[in-house]
Image (cartoon, rainbow, N blue to C red):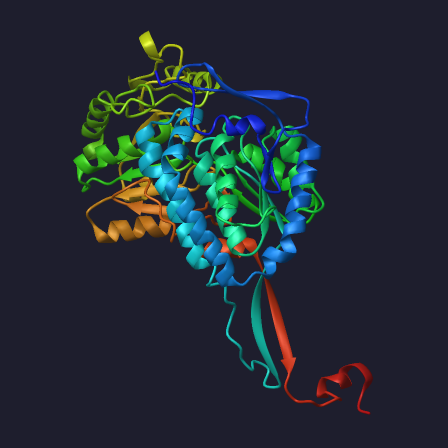
Length: 505
């Protein structure tokens, strides 16, 4: 097993709160130990943020806001280009820290999480120069109108534990590119890469207070951040249940709100699909990050002629997936985030045995892997559409497969959950593909693939999966205010419309 240490660990001895450009210790009076989910061994203990730390971070962001919001687009762009360069230079440090705290394979951190984050920084460095509103025009005939995009103020963001680095980037980069300042609360389980991200921002020259991190619990630091009177906007990524609570608190303060919540992505395979491609896509799409991905393929609906062959093919391929030490190059998937979460996932599978068929997996491995929070890739077949395994977000390496007959039935079943974050359709027929992309209710619909994301394209859901977009230029709609400016062009003191108020004089 990999030694429980990473390159920046000694620096974090100064504390796990990053406020006004420096690391500090938390003041809650409660400590938290980050545990390596691959071994169950403690990695790092730190003091959690309390409400005083949140107040200090928000004050730092508030103080930095006037200067940063008035920086020119070119100045913010230059700072973010420098940030992308610093991130790229520290790529291995980020990859090792991410894999250690999350348990994800190092090859996933190196090839997906870290490069994606560097690319996000580079994208928003360019996008910072493109915050235009509508062009000027004389829409009334007597006035010239134009639209300004302006930053909102201090943003308070809460990020999840499954992709800590990427989620920090998705929250921080569009906010600061638009001229806002930010306080981010990562999950207390996975604070390392958010802290390193903020350190890198300072090293790149972003002013102190523009990016702040408070590492604390949701019920303490998180709720205080959402409710804080000096926070103008809340952005939250996490479960739908917690998102509802965040929405209640944010709307009570009339704040701008952005929610990216749970998912239960359908994977619809029509009878003309490339079966080999669909099998490989399903296994990869279901098991990325050990299935701890809100866009992971979780419900495969397969048209009846291909159903049995698909189930057999997925089971065979799943059995070859290597579960193991995240730092072993041969490992395909690592552990789940914690033993508690592993037991939650196992509970779904055990209950499913009473109403469905567990084709492969469905157990925690023993031997050298027994101390970790591992769970084998699992395939469940023939579950009823209204069953827990089909309707609930399991958030683990579990794929449920169901048959369908007509195209309309397959699309109806795909839409038959509360969620609508992502989906995919597998077919060689352009008209089937077109119908699927129109009718599936999800923020992203892939055709003949599942999972790829791009900095240039928006990410966000429908229905109980939330609202608002991460990444892409569309994210600026979350992090900017729109102002209409109108100039009178007539120089006439007494306007014709005044007579509606005080008559003809």
